[in-house]
Length: 336
Image (tube, rainbow, N blue to C red; front, side, top):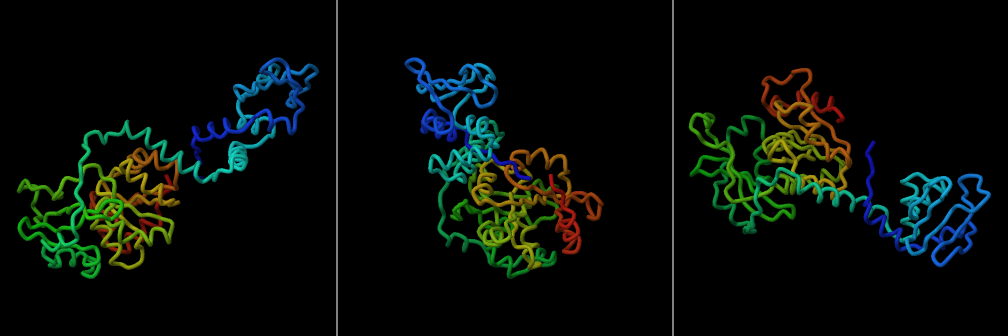
């Protein structure tokens, strides 16, 4: 069950905007006692002498006998015996606010506060340049045969604008920000022995900074919304394989095995209920649970884990052994 969180600052502000004495007097008979005090018999217990007080200047109540007190939200919970959710809904009704706004605000406020604590400090803020779409023509429209041999459709590669940099011998794809503006290109080496050659497997052609986007989101977004589910791989190549099978098109790549705060914000803003983490086989369940602690507060999070050791290698994507194996792994996904 998804835990719902509300914006505590917004709730406090709504309580301050509503006159507690005026509202409470609808059900409890208060009498003025002094310049800034109103008293009544507390409805929570037998109260021979009035012990429930409201101080209008503080817009708060307090019972000297049962020691219950607080603002209007607390009044709704204690005096009207409402759950926190029910009291929040009623407070929103009294204030004319949309409760859904409270939920979204809490999510964003929560992540904003956590952002300062994230290890993203290692990635500096980079001023990005929006590139013209024609920039992709710098690279060859050659279809990488090795990817075709792995089962990736040439049509799918064309749809995702996969190109080849013949100068560096890399398979290249566009990098787009969350508004789908072209901000750069990323290249994957075609040299199988890249480690012995001391060549980076992946290379960004421009400075990107914090990963505040998902590769493949432009193509997959309609299907993500349709299914109310997002499947997240480490690399775009896995997304292309899934697309080539033509069934699950609601997949993207986070480009690493750690979701950044900005990526989590994107998921939250979309209102997606189900998130499926399908990272490479060397990322275990415990590690995924640890990395997804934040996201699990706001969505159903599942992990695709090879617990039965059906993948042929220890470090590979869940889609690398074909559609049948993927279907088995996806069917046994674990809620975390």
